[in-house]
Length: 176
Image (cartoon, rainbow, N blue to C red; front, side, top):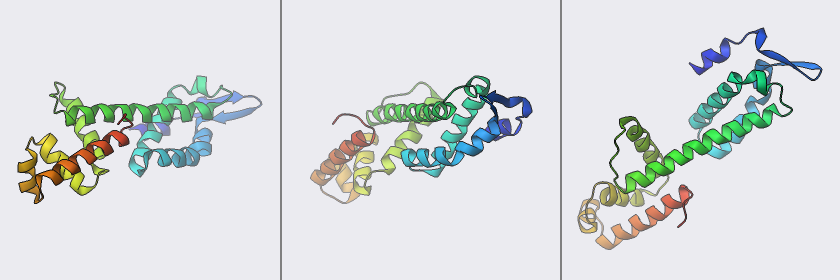
């Protein structure tokens, strides 16, 4: 749908900036590769990079009359993209905190977003850490019960869960 918005642009979407006429299409063509590389370094995934790029370009397009006249439209684009990324990170941090504490959610849509954010964060952990956190924190088993399920001692389960929680805090940018 966002791509449809970008395709419906016409000549009236161009502005005169200084002595040259710059259209939104020219702006996108000039900045696409640079923004992609920068966002990929930040997100690490192609899908999230592309989603952020679409959102950022859409927001710039919605404000193109004002943004196109700016001295630094590229800076506005990059700032918009980074703000979108930071918003996603904040939502993911909240989701992890909520899920690790097993806090009930009253909003079913927020619950789906939280689950997705937790899933993404857990993917970054070692397998044993992930298994220990899921069985003890999310499923509520004691370390002895989790050890029997996972085929390891209770002390090993506690160690993996502790290290996994520390890694999650680190990944989410929270203090240790």
